[in-house]
Image (cartoon, rainbow, N blue to C red; front, side, top):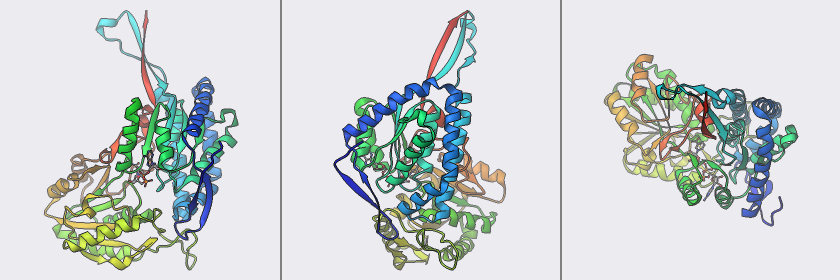
Length: 468
Ligand code: NAD
């Protein structure tokens, strides 16, 4: 694919050039879709067994070349190498699961015909959709899109992937690894690079479904483009996840999990912890523990390890995101919140040092909008009923977590939470479990990736009846 224009990806940590990439326009995008569509015909002919073998070969390549992918992820996002490697590993786990489970979930099976149709046999089969356009974000540039790419390929589709303009090299490397390791199905997974316009061209290109992950604002734009051609859309958006802490909870466990969930990846996680509701009796103690742990965190870039110790998180990947953090902080403090850890001086672009806020008014942007930085707001509530009410009063509904004295009570509280994924006694428990579907509702989007539902997201059911 030749393109007249190009753009440069930069290291968020140093501002230095990482690489140049072409800006692909509508014609190049359509050519990639055509190529993937023709490769998908052979892919269909490979059958369940052939596709599974090819995908497991690809998986082994990702695993054995994880360092190469992680190097690119770290250079483009600024995250520490251990996080970049962990992300690749997670992607490998999900790809492996999709390859091994596609036939079980989507293969043809007999279903009951019912009393009125005893004269016929009834079969249910799933067919691939064709070509899936995957539009990805920058915060987990391998793990997140792989949730769609791996399942779409396993379901028998071709894929054209448009990575974020902040992480184009990661997307290019993924497609190159496919070509190198599965050359008999060259073209089945293509990457196109560019900004939002390239994503828009992909959504308008005649693909059979778009799997979008990114912000709610962009999801609306993609949905409008898809609406013109009735192209189905799976939209994975952001989150404003809450953690609920009861009076009998183990506060050390809760504080450890909250700090990890809020601060890892510099807080740039769709299902990261952004709000905490702790019952009054333990609020002060919990805050102290959170502050003590968060204070210890070390922030730097991929190459910024000091004293032989790796850093806990790096810079914010999107330069303008430090402005959002500053705005949320200013509004919260102006409305009466306190900051037991950090303050305006914590924002030192491109880095943001850990921020803990308490008593944040519920209508403040820090409680309503995605902050996407290493910031956690810890508010006190009368009891767990009030915690549930506040947690559910959010435009987002992606993940949530509960810490209580008993797992039973935790599960009962979790049942009442409006979220696609709930964790009890931990946070982000779903992330490494490939059989669990993932996705949200409201501003967090619609549709599911991962698990059986994730495979069905990229297939269409076909009912077959055979006269006996
Ligand atoms: P973004 O919405 O800015 O961009 C996402 C992708 O959409 C990029 O590839 C971008 O180039 C493309 N795009 C931009 N404008 C477009 C348009 N008009 N048409 C088509 N494509 C367009 O999001 P981001 O900043 O890259 O990612 C961060 C967001 O993603 C956060 O809100 C985060 O919570 C969310 N996220 C969600 C999940 C999830 O699984 N729910 C996972 C990771 C990130």
